[in-house]
Amino acid sequence: MLPNASLFTFCLPTAATPLEQQQGCSSIPLRKRASLTKPDGTLDIDQAIAQNVATINKHRQNLLNLQRNTGSLPQGWEIKPVAVLPSNVEARLNKRHIEPLTEESDGLLWADQSRLEYLIHGILSAGSSDLWVPLSSCTDPACDSRQKYNASQSSTSAKQYSTFSLQYADNSTVSGPIYKDTVTVAGVTAINQTFSAVTALPATLANSNRDGMFGLAFPAISNMSADPFFVTAASQGAFRTNEFGFYLAPSGSELDLGRVNSNRYSGSIEYQNADPSTGFWQITGGSISIGDTVVASGFGTIIDSGSTIIYGPQAAVEQLYSNIPGATYNSTMKLYLFPCSENVPQVSFSWGGSAFAMSAETFNLGTIDNGSTCAGTLVTKESAGLSLGGDVWLLGDSFMRNVYSVFSIEKNAVGFANLA
Image (cartoon, rainbow, N blue to C red; front, side, top):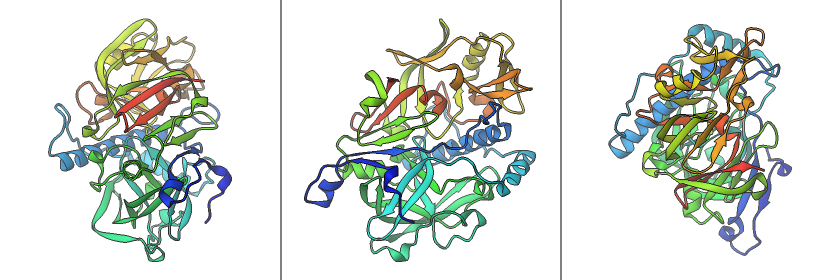
């Protein structure tokens, strides 16, 4: 399947050599992925529970990778048991497999430069480091409708002597052999890029439109102990600037590779130092406020575009919701609920400079109880079972939708700017 070129815009200079031709920047439109909020404004409770389980297990695996790759974990962090999707929730989600899919995952171009060229719909995650797509020999039903990698059709394919495996909430796995090949994303090429072409996909992915995973974090949390695409391409001089920017919105979202898009933000970008040794895009010195009340400060923050829900330490999250009259905790959904009639004070994050506020829309995951009760996007790490220790917070796209976010391996920093 050849890509529709109109889906992508390139800013590549004309030059003589292949490397010079690819050196530049590209903007990738991001299609709307499955939302926790239904079109009628209600919360998709089963999807919220499933995403929470998936986030827990993703970062559990990240910590296993970090421990294996570096020999240790940050102080206070621990590897907890695999989270399991409740059987009744799994059964209801499985019934959706036969229903038409109305939403698409993030879109990106994944290509083997020598022969293959696909339009792959995958999850672009700044909280993961690995790239995987289905292998042509995958016979799982979940592989049926997906674009697949055929190693025999690539003259540059090289199978490695190791395998890739990730465990999911129903104890099934995504797994398969590891390859190296030429990978191109929106016209930017990484030679000898490590990735997995998986032969097993769990049934829990059968109702997902995504073909694979495209990780944008650091090598320390790679399951394959390999450089992610962006690191490989940057080391080969593929970009004008070694950074990428996320603009997330109800429509017109995009990933800017090798540049920042000045049309997407106003003012200046405020950068905060990140430590790549943890594998995450993790910055320090964070604070959170609700209205004029500072709830917590001096904490670390992991920025993860692959998650929606925001996770923080229990004491701070409980204090925040104490400022919302009528707020309660629901142990089944593992979410905080509050009366939709309440005028919730604005929640904002800061890292010592500007305060970046969340809109009422991004703070609210959706309504329940006939629209009288709203679900907040902030939850506690402890009740959810997220194994990121200490005072570290995890900020997903509920926060990122309020800012233009820049991830720079040139500066080892994450930057935020107010939207234009």
